[in-house]
Length: 244
Image (cartoon, rainbow, N blue to C red; front, side):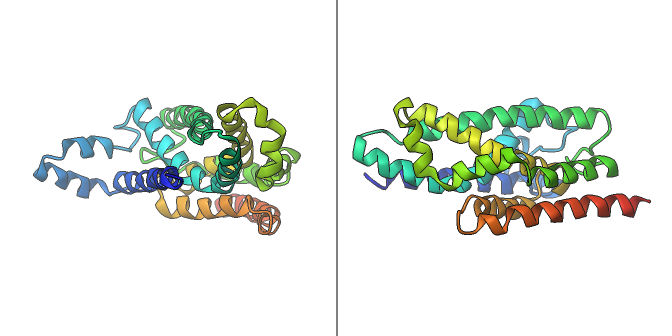
């Protein structure tokens, strides 16, 4: 019983990655699903912005958030689980609160994506941004790596025991909301770089997940956050120089 919730959580993460893989299958291969009557999966895997509506785009971002952000929060979940076993506090309300924050982020990101598409700033497949917008996103994300807000949020993520002890009396759901807000403060700019790396690019998502996990590790994060900021700003300059 003590490990059942962890098996379910890892199953949720695996399901999210599996769904993203299916959604990233090329359109010509998705068409083969008609041979097997798999109309549901064909509809689910329509991720091009000229064929997907707001709800489909939101689902896509929600799956990305689940696949990328749940792994980064595992140390905090484990800390809460240890405390909860001693005090009888349930585990899933914490995860639910965390999920609410990233569901709201998914609603906003999907709206941004559709607006960019309708104004011709992004292609139908969700990437191929204009050079200026690409450079702007990279530069913004790079500068944010040095911001006091990012540093404050990372400090809380790297010390989950202190974080939970400060807010334990608020209950697991509100703690989940707080944890989600802190993680959002850490990672929103990197998540939006999906517009640069490709919204359904599994390689980008895998690398970004590893980076965000590393940033939240106290022993590793200090060697990741600021160097990554320099890399992102250099990438922005490279895009601008390449367009000259």
